[in-house]
Length: 239
Image 1 (tube, rainbow, N blue to C red):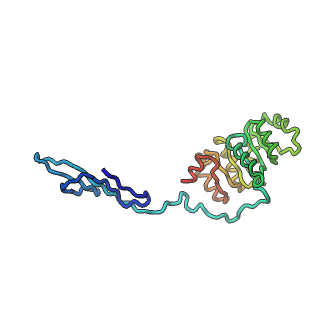
Image 2 (tube, rainbow, N blue to C red):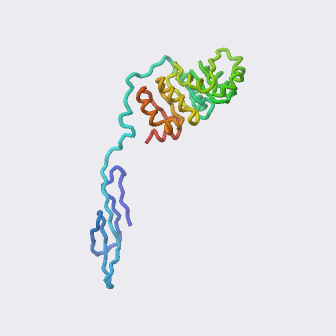
Image 3 (spheres, rainbow, N blue to C red):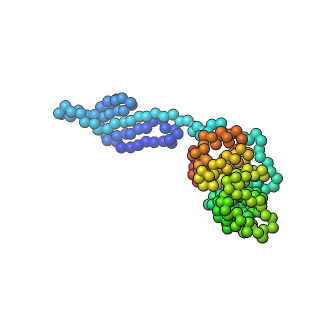
């Protein structure tokens, strides 16, 4: 049996062809199926092969979100390096984001950092990137963070708890917010950043899974852009 196929978007017909040579008659069945039969001496019927035809029309793929890929009416502007806020700065996404910023310090600067409880790493990040605002969600660790930053000349403002993370998300100087907070804890700061007109580098799945029906119209309302910042998000972005 031979299968003849062309490009999926150019399929006109599929043919399953019987390669056996025979002079037996063809009988057309329903749905475009042809059956080759031979009547035997016992008045029975034996089927030797069949041809199946199915038609398809070539057409360009439809846009995943029609009407959403539009030019910005008011492009965001800033002086010098692009200002970035990183939420979840001590996690995997956050540390990789800061690695990229460190490699391109002529293009980016950090204005705010937010983390959960890793005081040691957060303090190192503050010393390296000199943000204006630092938020630590675990309020009981604020004194430890202050002690770790005691010798820093340009001390940032320090805020705690969920409200601190929210303030980092809507920092007035930030142009883009990287949302690397894990789970539903990252949903509210992301909403806050959108409402403040920040573009979102998205690495928090719950933003789309739990809040998609609300988040997408909100993003459209505030004329902000979503950029995928993790593998799963990038895969969805490509669909």
